[in-house]
Amino acid sequence: MTQGYFISFEGGEGAGKSTQIRRLAERLEAAGHDVVVTREPGGSPGAEAIRELLVNGAADRWSPVTETLLMYAARRDHVERVIRPALAQGQIVLCDRFADSTRAYQGAGGDAPASLIAALEDHVLGGTVPNLTLILDLPAETGLKRAEARGGAARFESKGLAFHQRLRAGYLEIARREPERCVVIDADAELDRVTAAIAEAVAQRLDLR
Ligand SMILES: Nc1ncnc2c1ncn2[C@@H]1O[C@H](COP(=O)(O)OP(=O)(O)OP(=O)(O)O)[C@@H](O)[C@H]1O
Ligand SMILES: [Mg+2]
Image (cartoon, rainbow, N blue to C red; front, side):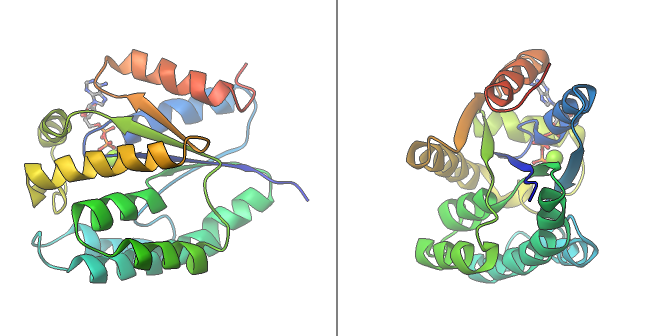
């Protein structure tokens, strides 16, 4: 059976995930790879419908546990209908946010129990976990300023600086615990330098010629 390669992009608001994922997709396609770009929450029609509930409205619209359950309902649909089929066809899947966003946002940033999140990962993902996770790291203030300048939907952006600082620490803790899967990328740098750091991390694992 062919087996693809699964890369997730993680980090706080305005870290540069969406910008960098487009650049990596172009680079991989130019090297002859078959690439699927997708995102969370969302990525399949059902999960995009759930996304609307998650990204709009007041910051405290959902409790962290409710939010975790909505995220995992969306993630299951996305995994079943988009990610697994693409990997089974041997494609490279680039996903803008995945399970680590729940650990960071609802776990470290909110107060959803780590044991609940771990159980959901175990039962809901069924082993569909990224081969490589790129964690785009930068000071929370810098990311929020970038996101603000860009404009757009804002439920998570409106949660305040302390929340985003816990989020950053949460991501760094994930990287510390899973150094084989995770690579921390300094995202507080010029765009092209971030792109180059990502390309280097990927080139150690895939042919990027
Ligand atoms: N390294 C960088 N230096 C300066 N500006 C950047 C850099 N990377 C991205 N930006 C800009 O910051 C803004 C946010 O970038 P982008 O949308 O890629 O971030 P994101 O991580 O996808 O954010 P979100 O989590 O809100 O979706 C964009 O206007 C983008 O052009
Ligand atoms: Mg984005």
